[in-house]
Length: 452
Image (tube, rainbow, N blue to C red; front, side, top):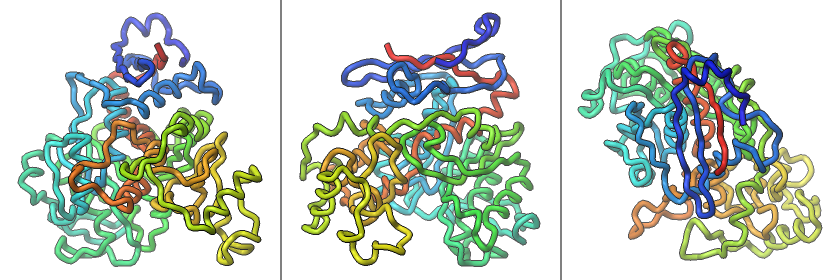
């Protein structure tokens, strides 16, 4: 439980309660929005799970059999560009709920039509657009870095987006960044891959969105064409206040060491600084066993893609058995493949996860022991897709098989899971965007998260 508000502040607060029903208990999360200064949304007590509001809240979120019912009158309308299956949207919707609002996805766009089927099944957007985002807006960028500007006013070309202009509260986006093409003076018909990143500030200006959240891998800041600096300049030129930085999931208490780079931009208010967010919301990371232990007793099922794993080769089965037989977490050189012996920079491959520590970064290779430290802490196999999905912050109700008659391949599911933004990062970066707006009128403060 967080520190209590002074009694006079309680009288001026409005509160929200959301309940998550799990198989064994009901967990209630209460958050107050009121007059107090911006403070911690989550408790900063030790890493223990018993009595830990953070673990109760997020554990119930992950293990819920169905989405929480949130019927708040005020809605946050957003679109998700380059959405894939919706990891970033999940976190944004939970953040809106925590702040007493209802996250409403208006449109999700991605070239992966089957990923959009999953998004639509789970998050129910008003529209889905299985097409390239760059074809949905007309714009041209002149210059780069601090000199970047739009040569003319960006315009939405999609009729659905045209109808949303001035009515969108937030744009979420995870554009790819290839780092190998010129950014200057390309129209939407000629743009290279990197221009996809610049589609986001163009969309923000064309739709007059209040808030913008852009995520990517941390090394996007080293892009040799300065796509990040150009994007920030375009946003500022359009009247947005901008903050940016790297957020790490484990710094917020999540049991995975995943890092993503974010740009957060807001009009009419300053978003919460990401550096401050990482400091004030810091808490010890939970161990990965917190997410996996209750799944350990489930039998593997070859007919359920979420609860199955590929059969290990004879050599890899020997390696996995050696780790467990000797209670080790790293292979000795003698049983490593030659390419992963001394001198390699990938010592974690063929490694076993440590149950008392956060998981390493989940990638699309989690079904292969030679792609990372993906051997289960207590079982002689790699992670199942459901286990990896939990580590990425997808709740158990999230259905990756949108069309049972046309089930996705294992490769599709592992790619969707491995490429996703953990929902907890989406949660906190959305707090950064919306918190600045709320602070201008009624700063938010979390009162309690507890189990009943």
